[in-house]
Length: 203
Image (cartoon, rainbow, N blue to C red; front, side, top):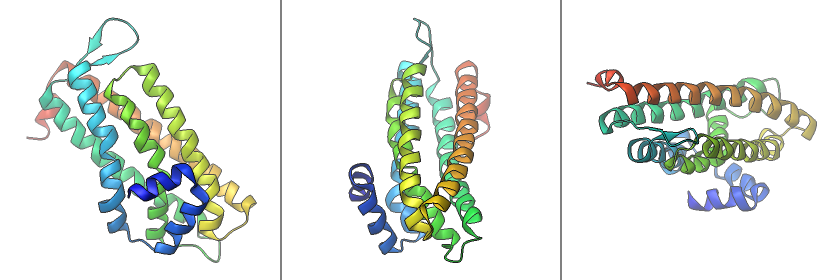
């Protein structure tokens, strides 16, 4: 896992070739990569919102109780894992018109590694200032887009022009999915700060 993370950050072209040659399964991807890295934004957000509280740049903070934070953290984690599968399925759907289209499972593996910068940027949620988290999210999206543009042509076995079209569509829809996910998470964490309704759903 660590080798792939470092490789995707330091030398993505070489790392994409290594990942492609491994023919990794979805189950191995999740157990060795996604489950661990997806925990970074979840744990960071849990610590930040229960110990420090949300801040919008002023002195006032909004904290979440430990019970609500635990329940919302579990929900956040499930949403992230689901989003990886959704994006992978999207890539597969877009690539089906090409003769060398990878399987759906291979596309999910591809999506799992593409999301690495987004997972890592979640570390900044440990101190949840809105502007700081927004900046980290933008940086994560930018590098995720870079990995997507660099990896799609070789992964799908298509030209750079065709890869650009698929990458642009995937990134646009992926960002939309991310925005919906973040909006839902912020809303749920805000509700958790005011009452324990969300936590009762997990009982």
